[in-house]
Image (tube, rainbow, N blue to C red; front, side):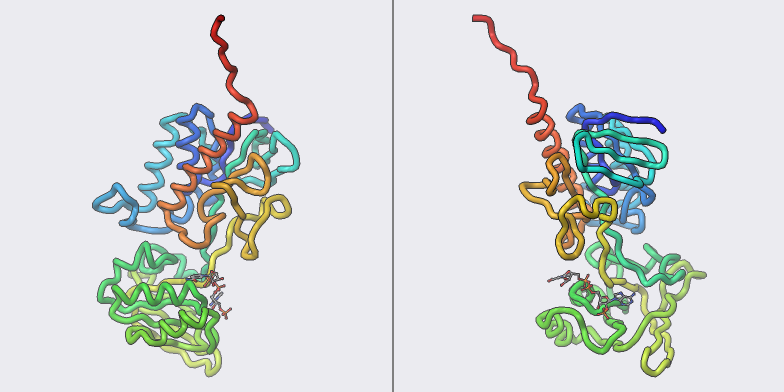
Length: 319
Ligand code: NAP
C-alpha cells in the first residue's frame, strides 16, 4: 500500500469537489481529488443542464463534469479513482485509507454529496435522465404542456409538484399513504392548485417504457385495494428524500438531525482543518452552481488555514 502525503485532499468529484480541486490547484497546493465510486456526482444522472451559467445552449450533465475535471487537471489537481474505506480525523495529519493507498493530509475537503433516494425499480434506473428525474428545478422545463407524476408526500414532493405546474399540463402526486408528511402550508397550496391531483395509498410498481427509452406512463398499485392501473405521463419526479453521504465521518464530524454536515464561518466543520462543501452540507439549495460555489469557498478556507499553520517566511529588509 502506497503512502501519499498531501496538503489538501478532497473526497468527492461532483461540482463541489472539482471546483475545490481547481481552486486549490491554482493556489499551487497540488491537491488530491479522490473521485469515489460515483465519479462526477449526481450530474452524471442527468441529461441536459440548462441552468449552469455560461452555457447559453445548455450542456449535458456528463459533459459538464468532464469539462470541470479537465479544468482541475489542467492546473495540476491529481484525480484518482478510489473508494475511501476509512478516515481518521483524530489527529493531524488526517489519515485517509482507500483500497490501494494511505493518504496523510494536512487538510481535508469533504464533498461527498447526497444521494437522492430512489424507489428501487429497475425501470426507474433505466429511464433516469430520460423522463425520470430527481430534480424539478433542473428538468421541469422539459415537460412543457405534458402530464407528469411526482412521487412522495413530504415538503420536497409538494414543492416540486407546485413548481412543476408552471410547465406541466397536469401533475399527479402519488403518495403511499392517505396523509401527507409535508407542512400544512405546503399542503394547502398544493390542494388549492387546480393542476394537481392526488393518488393516495398508492405506489409506483413500474415506470413505462424502458424498451422505448422514454417515459410514457407509470403502473400504479393501490395499497389498500390492490387495484392496478396505468397513468399516462411523460415525466416522473421522484421526491422521497435524500441521504447525505456521511457514513465515513460518523462520530467524527458534527451533523444536523438529518445527517448533513454542519459548517460554520464559511465551510469549516467541527474539526479544525476539515472543510465541507456541496450537498453533503446543504439540504436547501442542492444546485450544481451552489455546490461549485461552496467548493470554491472550501478551497479558499483550506488555503487560508494552511497559511495560518505554516505562515510564509517573512523577509526582513536590511536596516
Ligand atoms: P421527507 O420529509 O423525509 O419525506 C419523504 C416522503 O417520501 C415521505 O412522504 C415518505 O412517505 C415518502 N417516501 C419515502 N420513501 C419512500 C418510498 N420508498 N416509496 C414511496 N414513498 C416514499 O423528505 P423531503 O420531503 O425531502 O424533506 C426533507 C426535509 O427537508 C424535511 O425536513 C422537510 O421539511 C425539509 N424541506 C423543506 C422545504 C420547505 O420548507 N420549503 C422544502 C423541501 C424540504 P411517508 O410520509 O409515508 O414516510
